[in-house]
Length: 159
Image (tube, rainbow, N blue to C red; front, top):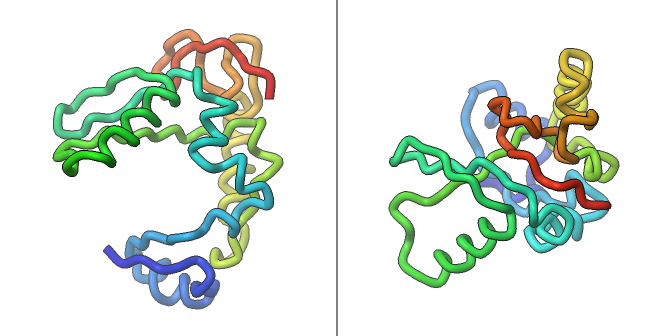
């Protein structure tokens, strides 16, 4: 899998090298490209604000999900980084953008146009409850009633 440093990737280079050719790429050191508040997006910063939230964590080879808090997932990552490589690592994926973080994100310069902004606008237009919290949803925009959402009910934290 190809990887590029964000600082060395132009919009034209991304479009020509990856987008038009439908090739995957890992963009390294991209934190400063999509936020002006990087401390909010580090694992430590996310755990400080959302550590007690429960997420579905994917165990791909076992074809199952487990539920754990973000803090427990962080501890899992730290523990496994100190040992041999895990043949079946756990993956956390949550497609919702926490409203508390939405203010600090913007489209990276290497994307041609506002792809992330367009996606956010499309999601809001088609399902405003996916981004904006409602009374029966937790702060991450996830269905607190166990309705197939990536996150389970968790008490809302101020933030």
